Image 1 (tube, rainbow, N blue to C red):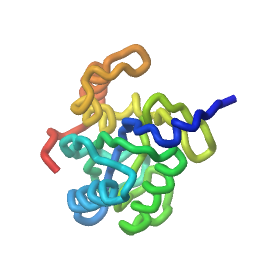
Image 2: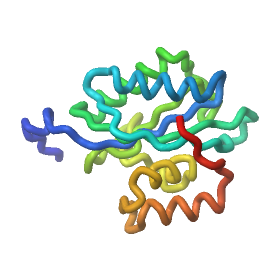
Image 3: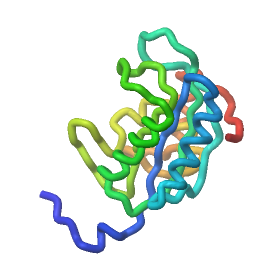
Image 4: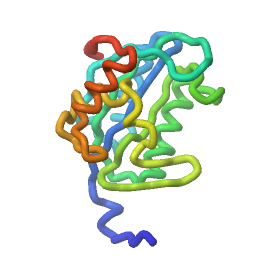
Length: 172
């Protein structure tokens, strides 16, 4: 049972979001999404990683992705943040398609303070983040000493970067 204290609704929390795009002007799609996050009113974009080009996941033939991670500060609940990210995706032109399919923009919540959520449509921490170089490399760029599953983010990222194709980071 989760006990919610009144101050939790107003407490600012640090979070990390992963953004990816493999349709159209990929870098511009990322720029617009980061800007939209910052203009949303209750999300402050604190830091932005470099942009990394990566191969898509899954069996569907598609273009490579550009990926980055942003550090945010927000008072939004996990559900409110999910609603906001979905709204930004929709406004950017994302349409629902196959899992791991091509995307104008994809925004995933990786971490939100110490919050843990496990619902049908939302799991925090993100359940596959420790398996993906396109998440861990930019996250480790922002927080190399972050401990995830008893290991530093930079060590996880280094291991995944050897196993998976990921390009050199470039500024957004």
